[in-house]
Structures are given as C-alpha cells and as structure tokens.
Amino acid sequence: MNTMTARVVHTTIERPWQDVYDFASQPQNMPLWASGLASGLTQQGDEWLADGGPVGTVRVRFAPQNDYGIIDHTVTMESGLLVHNALRIVPNGDGAEVMFTLLRLPGMDDSAFAADAAHVAKDLAALKAIMEG
Image (tube, rainbow, N blue to C red; front, side, top):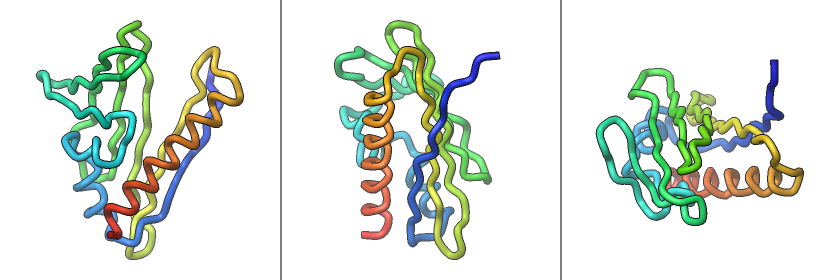
C-alpha cells in the first residue's frame, strides 16, 4: 500500500463554526479566499470548472452540503491527475477550527511541498480575515 506524506494546515477563526462552514462551503465564495480558484468557478452539472493557470482548466467536485463541516473536494487536472483535498470546519469553543489536509503528490520535492503548505496557509488566513472582518 502506498501512502503520501500529509501535513495538516489549520487556523482558528473567532466566528461560530457553522457560519464559517456556510460561507466557505459555497463554491461561488471560494474565489474570495482560495487563491487557486481566484479566476472563479463556473458550474457545469455536478462539477465546477476553473482556470488552473499553467495546468489548464480544472474540474472540481465538492462533497454535498452536510451537518459535519466537511468541504472535501476532488480536483481533476487536464492531465487526468486527481487531487483529493480534505477540508474540515469543526467547532472550537465558540469559534471554528479550519483544517486542510495537504497530501504530497508523487514527484513533489520538499520545496514544492513547503510552498503548497504556505499557499494553503495564506488562503486560510484570507478566510479568517473575511470571517472575522
């Protein structure tokens, strides 16, 4: 069995977790805080399309709305590569903890993995600023 190295990138948001989930789980809000989707998302059936810049158009499929704070999504690159992203919003006292599990993709070196983690941290900071602002 092959597994990938994982890193959980997280932030605490001083806002009820359900408020954070309600905002963050809406694909049309993601370009406001998820810079990888800054070009916007266009719905096409059960999927959302985004311009992935140098990787071309990507297809994103989100977990259905739920009561558990799960915003998992699978990104399909033009190359056919599937990237599974686990994103959770959970209660943390009166606020929320937002956790993104970053998986190190095959062939990714240490510096690229660190850059991906920094990118996710920046996005979560943007979400925090919106939700607390």
